Length: 423
Image (spheres, one colour):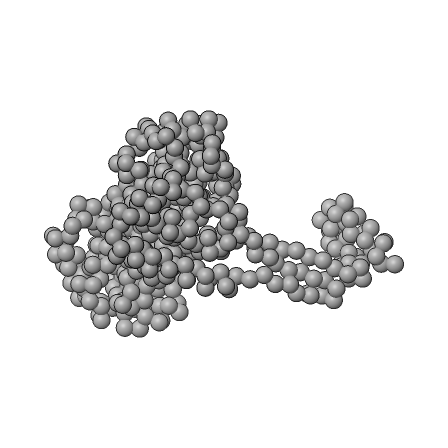
């Protein structure tokens, strides 16, 4: 039986009609007015009105030179890990052709989308890793043109480390513009920017709503909300480590969600005390304290089976398992964005440097989808061909199948093949 030692505050359903209306207005103006509208909203929302939104090679070079050798080496290391894992994923997504009946040949081909737009959010932190995840992944998939957009930092252009990350990741075009107007420009195109086929990347509620409204015109990755972590522990877990991991996600946003699911009351209570202790000196306490206070949950469970049920119902973006036998949970858990097994791994690894992609489903979307990976940029298309003899045999059956549905013209398209090839 589950017991709550701490429960998140009940919040009313958010009314996003004002957000939706604002987003619709921006999208419609950018679609009809192009760069003029982008410039208007860039000045309005970001105080940014450059001669050109496109970043020049000279600006990229200056950003690179402004970073220390160690900074560049660390960014390059993180990108290498992400690229390596993406390449392993790509290797297992393959085409094939098979003769499924005598003379009937069916196959699938794997075709990358032609152009993708990468949106890297700005705001509270420079999100270098978001650039890694949304630029390297489509390039490994084989996307020939990747456009990258990010907002200016305090009206002064792109943060140098973010710009270096975009360029080193392989972006073909880089633009300094943010928010809904950036997504609209990538989806609809504007002067100097041809439209893309997909738009991916995280952002605030306006960015998420823009992706929702643009879906269909372009493909998207996910409709992600505030970040989430669930940590599953037993009596062997270290409260100090667990508390640090919880707060590592709580610092993202006051709306970030955290859950501790514990098979041990003693360790759960010690972890709650440790969270409060660490908050006293946490540099990002202003955000993390609100997030933990309002959205943190601590849940006691009686058995591994019950723990699996609770975790799967929560369906978290990030799920850490710090138990003696974590392999049981690897085998039995079903709903999560990414799984971090053992004390030796932490969500921060996945967010920044271990190689898996950190663009992951939130708000229970892990029940039906995984996160961003090379497959999101690949179209699995099919084809078929047949010998005349096989076509005549199949056509006779297919004609009857069409007629069962009263789709008589479909049936005739089969019948004419019986008449011609059956001879």
